[in-house]
Amino acid sequence: MRIASNVLVAGARVAGAACADILLDRGANVTVYDREDSERLQALAARGARCVVADTFDPALLDGIEQVVLSPGFPPHHPIATAADDAGIETFSEPELAWRLREPGAARWLAVTGTNGKTTTTTMLAAMLETAGLRTAALGNIGVPLVHAANGPFDVIAVELSSYQLHWSSALAPTAGAVLNLAPDHLDWHGNFDAYAEAKTAVWRGGQAVVNLDDPSVVALAKHTEAEVTGFTLNHPEPGQFGVALGFLVDYTGPEPVQICSVDDVHPAGWHNVANALAAAALARQVGVTHADIGDALRKYVPEPHRNVTLVEHHGVTWVDDSKATNPHAAAAALASYDSIVWVAGGQLKGVDVDGLVAEYAPKMRGAVLIGQDRALVADALARHAPGLPVVVLDGRDDAVMTEVAAHAAAMAEPGDTVLLSPAGASYDMFTSYAHRGDAFAAAARALTEGETE
Image 1 (cartoon, rainbow, N blue to C red):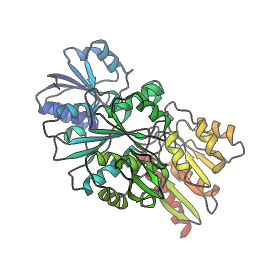
Image 2 (cartoon, helix red, strand yellow):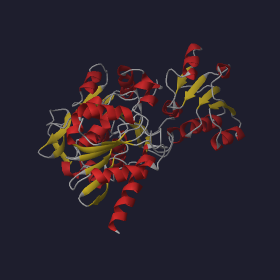
Image 3 (tube, rainbow, N blue to C red):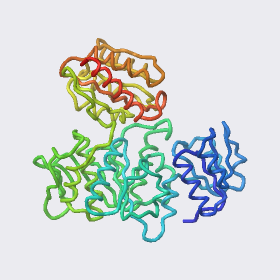
Image 4 (cartoon, one colour):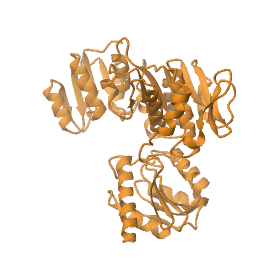
């Protein structure tokens, strides 16, 4: 599809700067808007981009603009998006631009989306593709920007796509796409759950849909797709499905069920990660990866950090970093994995209700330590559903608070307990990322336990 001569790029962080670079390489007249000056912005100006730094967006910047490339963080109600819409200007995001830049013979895309498990599934998939000898990479919402890899030296790429990125797409059509699960998230961005869920269906545009049969919301969406559906389930698979039988991951899409590997070969542990592995396997089979290569890749797979990772065991207490749990649905998977928990939670809930999560898992808790912007909402939910539970609410505003978190959690924990950082909220109120939050927790946990050993 045509890339216009006059393009506005909104946002000059990693994805936005990469888009502006590529557009400049192709001779476009590029205007870049950001609220803050940066080295990236200055570099783009040196290359000939018109760079505008302002707290508020001036609609006059759209004069003469034919296309707008929005960084994923810009919601549909942002003034740039609404002004472009009013002016009839086509708007899309970095993955859509990458798709449009693809040349004949470019790599096939296998896409992964869902509320949780995207990065784990995408990296599992990349491991399967690599084991099969294919030139590949895990890209999209992780790794290097897609625009730099659209025509790179790849046969197939594993692409993680967020609802933000998919909302701002129209032509993007992966060879196959998986929707892992759906739960309320990013409602402040999309406006409501239906809009959030609908955005996810864009991964099925290419005609092959991988669907979680255990998730009613995903199944409901799949009923309306014209794509060919391959389902996966944690139950015994029926013909045409991937599933689990006799302790093995099984592919029953052929005439007979084929065992892939043992459930015990999947790590990180947990049934949600078995589901992720099944989704990755279903995608890998779409491009001919053998069952043997899929099983071998899962046995050798090294999990990504901050996803239900055991940090240290000390005096019978296990400390676990699950900082990637940035919504209640993700936190539920971790909370379900342990019997007695000191819960470290809080952050930005993004308009999502935490009440159901607390009601279900409060009986497993020894206590809770709460931080972050919406800590009071979590505390209120705990007060309603576990009025006798010890709860500490901390007012720290930066990563130094984790020293206090570790001290209070250690005081609550007893042998056999798990101190679990699984926040159920985003991290940007106090940290630069969920990784920063997890690293701060890990450092505090290790400092405290090593200090006690001395």
